[in-house]
Image 1 (tube, helix red, strand yellow):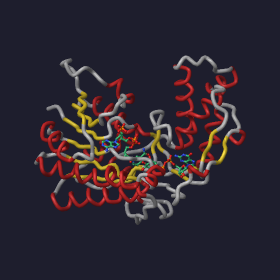
Image 2 (cartoon, protein in one colour):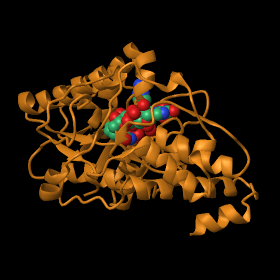
Image 3 (cartoon, helix red, strand yellow):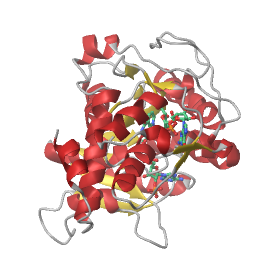
Length: 342
Ligand code: NDP
Ligand code: GDR
């Protein structure tokens, strides 16, 4: 029997890797996409096969987490065995600009989807993309038993989603899990998150296409892992015998400053010559330090990450160099190239 999965947020970083993983496992994958005036499917284009083709396994459906009745219709039609709720307004700083929209998408959107599962009466498992941002002001190391203390409208919305997912598990016996994922990145990371902002700028500075990089707080510590490994963890959570909540993290925390240093020095650059401060990148309330303890996922799911923040910086810089080169930028000078190959 072919398993069917429904993914919200399929056009995002994680959605694209998860779709890839599930297709490789033989799943039929259905993704929710938002109608936009421009294409928003760049991250999944390589997976797309015209649905008129009989071996098509990826199907995209217009919809939005703000539209509950559409979610009921879609789930009733698709009858997925697994639902992954990855859609969100996922940018923490932007959530201070758009708190109400963030609450609607990142918070209420989750209960709309859970209600759609319940009302449509389908038998399915449910994954909720919970976040290390839930811990906020609570110091590391953070595990499944660490108290939450959200520090942004984004985190407050995710807190609601965490608890409503748990409530549907307890109230209705739904196989519903929270993956409490620490920061995870990749060459597909959105350009305004700090890691990608840094690695993209380093590549562009090396190419002479940019000179300065404006940034906010360099002191915060994050536990950065590699997104393809984290989507494998999501899938494993839904294959477990019992629904439960799991932290996915590397256990290694580094500062934004160190990520900058590694990224720039990979290209023979001194970051201090290029990075400038702009207070617009500060958050009204910051999350100082997130370092996760992934012991439970290791023990119960056999999930073991292999890439920490330092290795990740190198992977992402190399990918941004390659992306520029692929754009036909034959600028890579000998110094940059020899550093890159090192
Ligand atoms: P992205 O920001 O890359 O992707 C977000 C996705 O949500 C996009 O596909 C976006 O669509 C979609 N989306 C946004 N609003 C709506 C809406 N109203 N209705 C339907 N779809 C919507 O996020 P990531 O892939 O990085 O993260 C995936 C999930 O995991 C998010 O929920 C995030 O909050 C959470 N998370 C992420 C972590 C990380 O480090 N990456 C860590 C912990 C949790 P579009 O392309 O049209 O904008
Ligand atoms: P985060 O990721 O808030 O941890 O949320 P982000 O990369 O935006 O920030 C990480 C840290 O870097 C500091 N910072 C900057 N951040 C950005 N974006 N831009 C800057 O110029 C800059 N300068 C310094 C921030 O202050 C912060 O301390 C991510 C998202 O993917 C969430 O959806 C997810 O839930 C969490 O990770 C876990």
